[in-house]
Image (cartoon, rainbow, N blue to C red):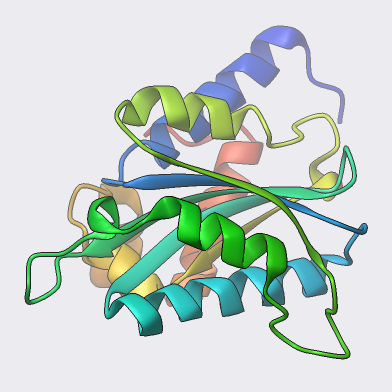
Length: 193
């Protein structure tokens, strides 16, 4: 399927609106020291996020775009639910977690020396960051990018994301299927968010 520039922009704008509808707190730009397979990259991201949850005593969710172009890299939008002590990701040292991405070995022997460069920023402009991350979805070659999430229950608990919540809560669609439906609707230009 060949899309003209207007169609590509329309799909990018829909992705941008979709991504900016959650109250994300961090954007993490994550690269790798060697080109990963998709499964390796997804597993490393999951383990890194799980460590944030454990070490910081927070419940964290993310939506991430993996782009195979330019040596494989991730753009991850993260949010957290306020902990009992009112702590969120905004209260956490981002440099600590960038360093852990760079240097920590999550699965010795399997993913040794896998970390690359990590840059983690606090989000102040949800619409702008949604637009930036959406630009990393390879609309011309959708097979070159992938869409991942962590803690689907946390993500669906935020009522500001109506499309995702409606699919799960009203139509009783499981979260994996909801993500697939939304991805297909956006890719095909059928969704209006």
